[in-house]
Image (tube, rainbow, N blue to C red; front, side):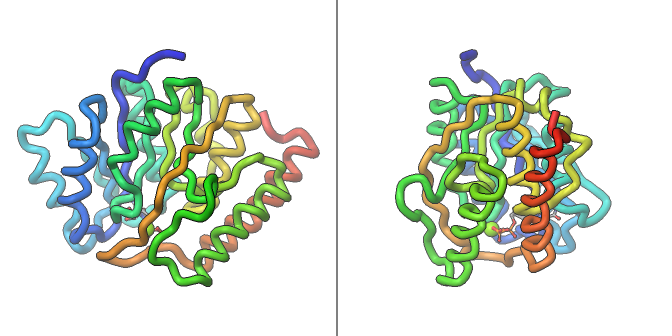
Length: 243
Ligand SMILES: Nc1nc2c(ncn2[C@@H]2O[C@H](COP(=O)(O)OP(=O)(O)O)[C@@H](O)[C@H]2O)c(=O)[nH]1
Ligand SMILES: [Mg+2]
């Protein structure tokens, strides 16, 4: 498969003031092939302004500012379109809260260069690699993946993973307009269409560490959306709505 010379890390942010400097520095230091696009939804805490200040003189840092909190799914879609327009070979989805270790990015790239179209940074491929989650949250996440696998038949251990490398050809092939979900739903839906199109998906083990600063933006609504989505995907599979 083609080598990846230019990779765009896509990082949606909402109120990540306490993490943003550190995470930008670590992503840019992780690999010379990597540039970073922050997609900020007018964070009231000024995250976008911090990034704008850092951009001066740094050609590897990019910022997209949106008018308000429009959700994680639409942020990713906007970032994927940006990557296609600006000729990147692949994107890496990464959270701003340091739950995903930027030092793992070169490993995701290596997995892709060895023959994967989509590399899933997986918490559940070799045991359970999550640090600092309450047991309840861990169980919900783990069984959400089991449930997704049983309902959709998609053979992944970590279906809701948010730390993924996606090759350009996948971004071109998947119909980005049809994805309407956010949060965990978005992560499942994108992987599902990638799988249905016959692309090669490989899970790469990573350790996920719960954020030390700031707050999670995930809520019950986003979980319910994901739970309903997997049945929609199953029905689509049965009735041929996936193309
Ligand atoms: N641009 C944007 N980013 C968001 C939104 N919701 C969450 N994020 C970011 O998405 C990433 C993951 O969110 P987080 O709340 O940590 O989710 P959790 O890890 O599942 O608890 C973080 O970088 C957030 O700042 C949103 O509506 N818009
Ligand atoms: Mg988080």
